[in-house]
Image (tube, rainbow, N blue to C red; front, side):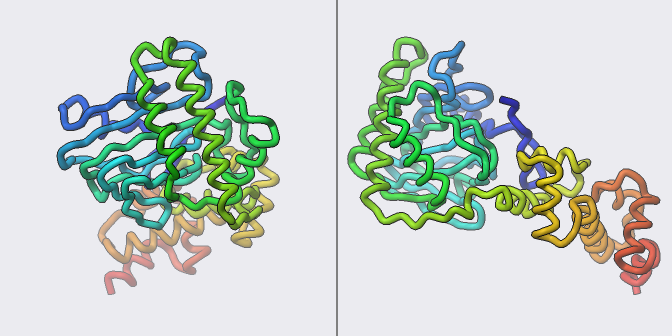
Length: 332
């Protein structure tokens, strides 16, 4: 499956590379035991062993750290469990301080951050499984080596899709699964693969049992194409310099163009390109107000316009004056 480029906080990337963690390990600031695919930290998994496993492991920080993981998203669903210490954690606009026994669950479309700005002393375990989706409305595709019954897996999927509570209190069984899972990780992946798959299956089954024991409020609205469009439109304000086309925007949402246009009009009352240009012009106006001396052409390109002439035409349509006239007003 083609991995889309995630665009968030004025950066474009495929998935979290955890470069800060890699540097800390190389500098001897903490210990790491992990296996991975792609740019994640750890020993690379070769071939088709444990397909769908992006990253699993544990870090152990015994001294205060000088780094944190900035805003990022992952290719799959991520489960983390803090065994010791404390850890600042942010998801969307919410801030948490994780304590021993806390479990976090994040989906591919949820930007999150670890550290404020740095992580503290502690031992963190994690698992990232690719479930074949990047947007809330897409149907999950679990790895084929999971042995949960189709009914159990469907129930777990439903609970994870329709409830996005990020922080939980892990029970003893879930805690044990994390310890066993990371305890059997070794650079010799093929020899530890069977045990690892067993513990991941057990972890997911215990997660389902924990959910069943609690009355979880579920919302179908979390799984709609409209929400995927809303999330994109909310994040695009930080990425107006990108060369957005209708095709690029609809692909970022995982939708056909006609469907994306429908939801964009429903949410903003504007077609996508008109909505994007309106945001760009508002950003340009803010730039002019804060720095009237900046050139019109430079501002046009910074805000994502391909030509200063098109920028000036669009600006006049919204503000009823040219960019230069607007700048003069700002100076006055």
